[in-house]
Length: 401
Ligand code: ADP
Ligand code: MG
Image (tube, rainbow, N blue to C red; front, top):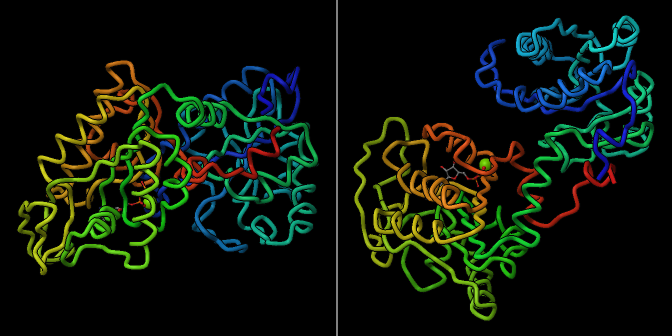
């Protein structure tokens, strides 16, 4: 994969940077600027190298139309505050205003192009259409840097097709993500423990299949665990269950046995009468994993399992975690996720390499008050990190080879 160094001398060069600025907004207020901050190393490095930095990104789902509420204006403003410089926002992505704003740039300046998804070609299924559009953006610049890790699993105009027309390289964020995820999945220091949770088995089939022969240990919690428990003959009450996955899961358990991969399942479960809706009564109780009452729903792993999972994680040299252990959004069902996160922190203290992948897992870590520095790496790309863990070739990375 080419990196910024491969682009050579950048003084006075116009560099297009695809970033992931898809931040949560409340009106025009950015409620979490983490994604903007994640792009700063690349933006600063390019500005220090004397480049003219032209930023492009998407925000929300405008579906190929100009939606004023999804303008990147709040992002340009926030970025300006973070780099202590004016970041002009062009009214369009490659039209007259973009051209004029770029023409007026000096070395070290930063300009932002308007939301790339205001253009229907950006996400068009037709590759020729994406190319023709990307060519117009490419005419604004001398080089392309891909730094939006959150979009590298999509073949779109501003992150993929653009590389056909310009010398291209990975930015520092993409480089960091790829290095961390590769370190965990290719030649990991052992034991490698993979912790999987989240809502459904069917969302994580690819990850399980890819890691089943690589991991030493698979720790399973979250909504998907009930299909595993059912596959082993336990009743799961009204818990999330994917009937059509039971046979598949049985095969996984068999394969794991043959490969000497340890599968760790919870021994106790926190249940409630129903899914915790805003107005519902929450009266959690802990039951044995093989004795879930017929009218109860499993919403977290119990205290005994929390300790078990924590200890298995600490006893690892590499830990990859994807998917919360319970409905962590509700305080009464967040303890399992907290125990796993603490396990990663404690493993890291012992010198292990720990990775958090998945959008909800990353936000759980932050919402539960963990210091991000306690983990070796928290991926910024939910879908992209998942597809990386599935062992898929990501189109936005392939074009940087
Ligand atoms: P990630 O984004 O980290 O990959 P997922 O999207 O797969 O994670 O899953 C996250 C969701 O799984 C959370 O919203 C959480 O509430 C839900 N979840 C976890 N455990 C359960 C459970 N026992 N029952 C229902 N939903 C669950
Ligand atoms: Mg998710």
